[in-house]
Length: 144
Image (cartoon, rainbow, N blue to C red; front, side, top):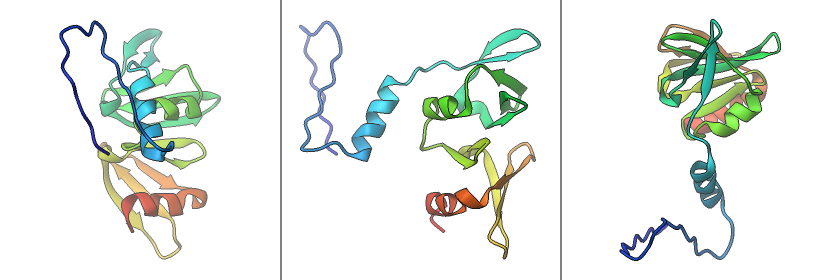
């Protein structure tokens, strides 16, 4: 992809124009990043906090709620897991099961055993398991 930037003093508002022969995954991902809301609100002890996606270790659904784990603790987010997944950067966050998403940048290690399952150890020592349904996707993301 070639990117051209033109500085025009007469321009009052930034504008992005994409010239292409067809819609590609790369362009769709770029549009998603540009359109995605930047803030993520989490709630703990009836107090709201702005969560930095870079500090998120994992997000998971349990008991009808969606939780986000950070180094500061766990927060409840008021959205469904798939909605949260759509707001997070797909190059950093990956779904590992029906009910869990991890931040690849916060993964300390991946244990691959002979049975074909993958155990992910996160920076805080938390262990997460990749479900069989997502093993091939994780292997592809990791290049193994």
